[in-house]
Image (cartoon, rainbow, N blue to C red; front, side, top):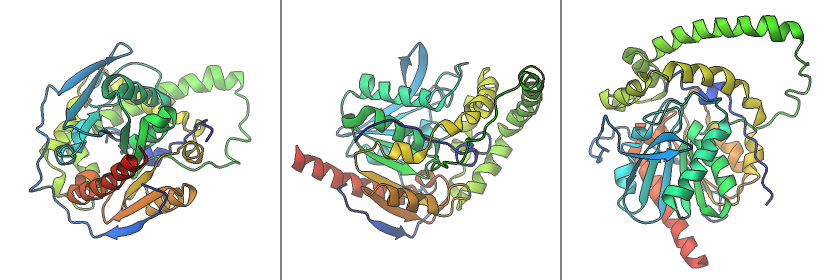
Length: 342
């Protein structure tokens, strides 16, 4: 299958309200989700982080636990490896689990670069090649889902499966962008600079507001249908990285330059490159990414299994027991298939 990926991210899908957004069978099932993470082992919160890897001169944070088939967990916009707190210990009982912080997020360096969606693709590709060093399964939530898809397309045989949880990305619209006019001198030298000044002032205020613990708690509670797991651990894992001296500038670049480049990528293009099994674990009550997208992905890409949960945008943290079960069941089938074809 030829590979030329383009995947569009919608502002609604990716922006976590400014700080936080096997086989050929097709299986659709609905699971009654039970909230809470109580009773599950939880990844200890370490203010200093866990492990660090230098990638292109930048410091990248990651967690690794367990032994077996490698599973790489990729967080969403504004989150970090700690967002997989209830999943890492459980998955690590049977697999070797990695969770990394994307550049600009979490405990990874807040690099002052021109952010493009493919920056994270390149980061994950190199992480698999340099740190994991063997074929892996990629798992991503929201922005991390898009990153998992484009990384899998680039890695090809080095990825044995992909799991998306309420993934970012939109299907292409052939008519969009067709009538974009050429930028005039007035737009380039007058309007654009004024717009950037205005954006800096407004986004600077929004970033300051968005990183306040009370605001983060409010946003999280709007996307967690059951807010029981919106606790100090989760809020602290978001506020600490936001205190980095470069965090405000990274936020500005993400919200302007990165967001303005979304139309370069379409979800159908990247899915057309995929050749491995795909699992969708979808919180059907997500106010940002509804269940219709999961159904469309399944229709577009036949080698898909689907598990629907009564949860919001971050089912892995809101209903971790249900997500862990869905992951482990699918991984068991996947590993059996891999052994049979080895």
